[in-house]
Image 1: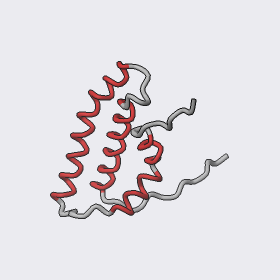
Image 2: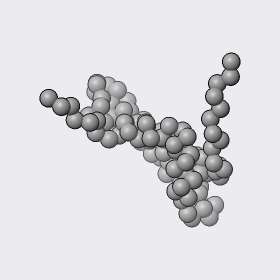
Image 3: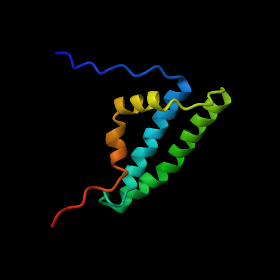
Image 4: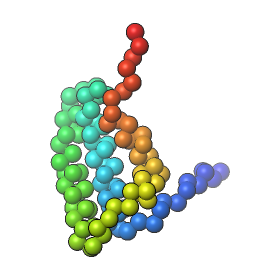
Length: 102
């Protein structure tokens, strides 16, 4: 049985793809640190430690884009890629959860 085929990612430069991947990794770490969603300090500590290296990778991806003359961020195209890579769910972990009604 074949799994349903996902829509293809938009055409991205290698640097843009690296930018998206690194951005999502940063989101994942910040989501794990979020005190409104976390459950233990050790997991948050590990995520905070990983965040520094993920942020450095994100910076490096942007440096490559800048050095190659990719001066513009094509927000619509990159947003489409983020949605296809589950970016909305991953970004949602960074926000506050809905308030519980009493």
